[in-house]
Amino acid sequence: MEPAATRLRVAAVQAAPAFLDRSATVDKAIRLIDEAAAGGARLIAFGEGFLPGHPVWFHLLPITHPASIALSTRLVEQAVTIPGPETDALAEAARRAGAVVVLGVVERPDPRASVLFDSVLVVGPDGAIARRRKIVPAVGERIVFTSGAGDDIRTFETPWGPLSVLLGGENANPLLTAALRSMGARIHVACWPPHFNKPGLMAELMTITGRAVAYQNTAWVVAVAGATSDAAVERLGTNDDQRALLRATMEDAASVVFAPRGGRHAGPQPGGDGILFADLDLADGTWANLVNRHYDRPDLLRLVVDRRPRPDALTLIDDEAPRAAAAEGLDGSEADDDGVRREIAERFGDRLSPAEIDELVPYVRGVRASGARLAELDLDGPDA
Image 1 (cartoon, rainbow, N blue to C red):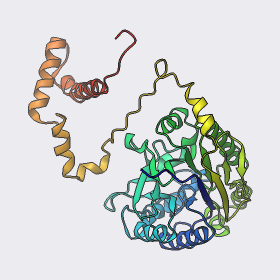
Image 2 (tube, rainbow, N blue to C red; image 1 turned 90 degrees about the vertical axis):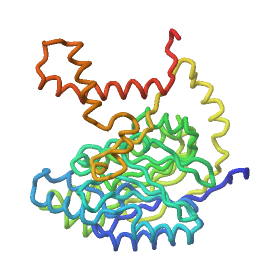
Image 3 (cartoon, rainbow, N blue to C red; image 1 turned 180 degrees about the vertical axis):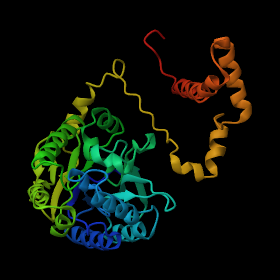
């Protein structure tokens, strides 16, 4: 097995999308990938929701405001399906650049349904496309985004070793970042939106979380923010006060690179569009990692990570879903439900009506399935 390369030039591409214009934003992304690659970058990272834009209007507008509804509708219409023509074009750009490209996207898995995920593409230098979804959309994001699942707790293989990527507030989840540390990620990309709802807030959180992950995971951290264009300010703001707030928060975009011990290595990039380059010595932090892992004490402290995918609403139109559920004994068959009903009736006698027993059937089946899955984990308790 060839040893991983020890030096890497990265580019944090801090850029505003052609707001809610999928085609134009892909074109801009390709231009920026080419520019970063010409500057020698082999890891090229963009912010959260870059394609086609992040739902930042919830910082300003009520959920049911007519402008909010119109913008959310446009977001669905301009979201990306993976794979699709947009991801094909980005894959070709990554292949041409010979670079790993990390790019935040709004994902619409099926054009038949208005279901969106806050996702990130990780495209290899060979054009291979991988994806993860944000496991907990934050604040206003929850209005339009569905949560990810266990298989989104993952790393990505690169020529420099495992790469981890988190979106926005995920970077502040200590159990999640600990899981990525346990997976061996020594390079971490923290993708952030263009701004939060108050000036100065996002830049401060990028620094706090970036340094924490860099120190605790002994990892290089590329914290990359989005940016806001003047055209987006005019489109988002419905009055002068809102436009003034947006212009104040535009300065929060401050991409930065942290070294494995938490020190600032490069940046911050001034607000607005720009590319922050940084040269990483991937051997830096090896000694700290060696020392740090001694503190783990897995005999005393263990983190259980459930990485199983969970079906979402879209699997209801997937012919494979019923077959997969049946294979686990969770197909909802009439015979299976009758057995559960008998168990409930034997346990509670005539204290429950037939209707109340029916209501308990899904709950009992779920508990049974969870117990079987926990048994598969073969966890040793303290008295084992």
